[in-house]
Length: 129
Image 1 (cartoon, rainbow, N blue to C red):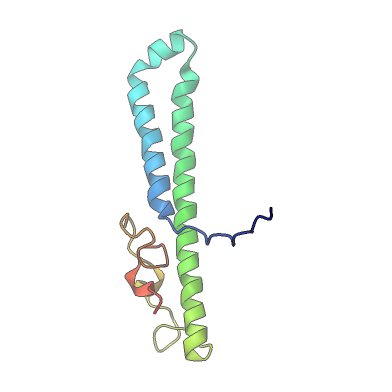
Image 2: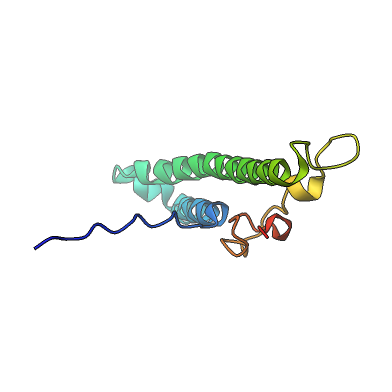
């Protein structure tokens, strides 16, 4: 019996910034909850729990920065592709060639935009048409 090979599914769009921010907040909450018990943790040799939470929070901040930079780079890339396809290769933006802020810098902290516009960045102006 032969099995047919199905085509690979397209990558799933997600709001990575909101996901990483949620995890970072959880690490901070863990640190704050354990902080009053520092004496007990120290007496029982478990201070590494406290510092693990703090390290998770610090790495989460780096992750938020990375995900925001990645989201913005993807939006700029899609905008450049759309400009190349529709405008003969000139940069989209103002008359002097600078990109407009509204198109390149979507509102920060928008946790509702995960995949709703096809761009995955919560920016309704980047919706493909």
